[in-house]
Amino acid sequence: MSAIQCPRCGSEAYNSYGHTKNGKQRYICLVCNRQFVNGENGNHHFPRPTCSRCGKSMHVYMRDQNSIRYRCSQYPDCREYKKLATES
Image (cartoon, rainbow, N blue to C red; front, side, top):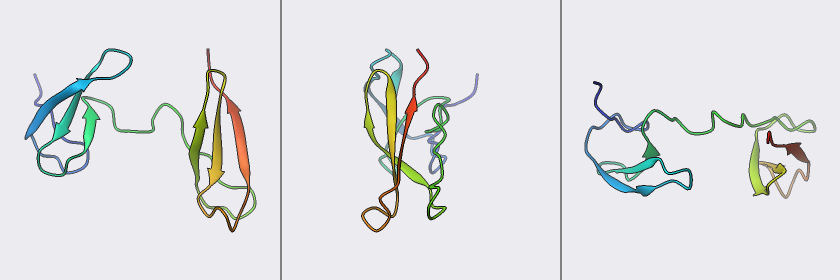
């Protein structure tokens, strides 16, 4: 059985910190204060697209049941956005 480690700093010092909406145990690192779920490292479910105008990464700015909307990280200088359907 492997020990639970913070994905940011690698510390094994953590506390339980509630549950996700899917019922998974959430933890908070006592060293860097990052919240995490064991075995998950962030945005692996939805890889971020790149902006077609400037080539920078895009950030999630809105979610609903059917889609995720991304906006350019250079907003408001670059006003490019993308709307991607989520898998149901």
